[in-house]
Image (cartoon, rainbow, N blue to C red; front, side, top):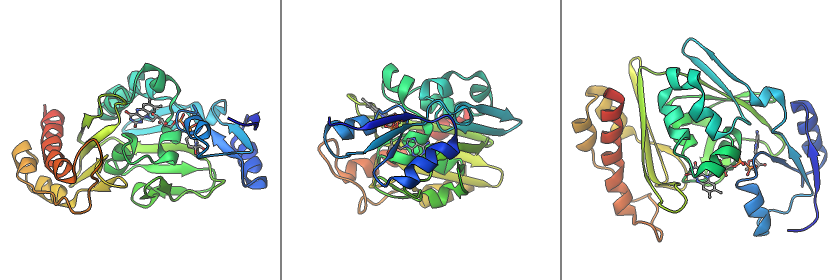
Length: 265
Ligand SMILES: Cc1cc2nc3c(=O)[nH]c(=O)nc-3n(C[C@H](O)[C@H](O)[C@H](O)COP(=O)(O)OP(=O)(O)OC[C@H]3O[C@@H](n4cnc5c(N)ncnc54)[C@H](O)[C@@H]3O)c2cc1C
């Protein structure tokens, strides 16, 4: 580590102003990715602007089927929030399976989305649930948010304030996790909306993506068998020390079928 300044922001405007004035300043949430990157000298910010005490970013609002979660809400609070568990249980379930207790106590929804790790869990939920990422200056549809490996639609000084979800008819997430980190070696979030099905896959490719073949199959027949019958090509999937592209391609319909069974049960 090396010297840097630390500021604790009390409102979104102040946090954004600091980043706009200094190209090397960065927002800090729980530090679960950023501090590790700094220790490895992959990131060398001049100033860290802590956004975890901004009241607007810490709020959870549930109104009917609408769920709005502040960007600085940690994974443990999403997992344990009674209103989220009632309205959007698949999201609470996903949050409760991120990392370990320490990661869930510090890692945040906004930090996870801004970081956009290819194996992160939340991006699959945001994409399959067709959520909206609300920033200090605009609203970004999930389909437009994720741009590639560690790359999003955010401007360098743009702050995620909250994420808005609409509860679908049914949803579930299944992942084959890395036993050490619990990141998704492959994860599949299935959401059945009124007249539509969205399926998002994480951990298998450079960035989260929608599996259109699975969506088509499940729109016609929302059953585990229909998901299991889909073949996913391995061409654009990742091969690394954990698994081959062919293995990940095999996992996607298997996990989708499990998610459909879970959502239907
Ligand atoms: C051991 C370990 C295991 C993990 N396992 C999993 C897992 O199983 N599944 C999973 O999904 N994740 C996992 N994670 C990731 C973790 O859950 C965090 O979500 C992720 O590291 C982001 O952390 P953070 O919220 O503390 O953000 P930080 O590390 O503080 O910030 C990350 C990035 O986001 C930016 N940022 C933060 N907040 C905002 C905001 N509101 N607006 C704009 N930009 C912002 C920062 O500037 C930085 O670039 C794991 C992490 C660790 C260390």
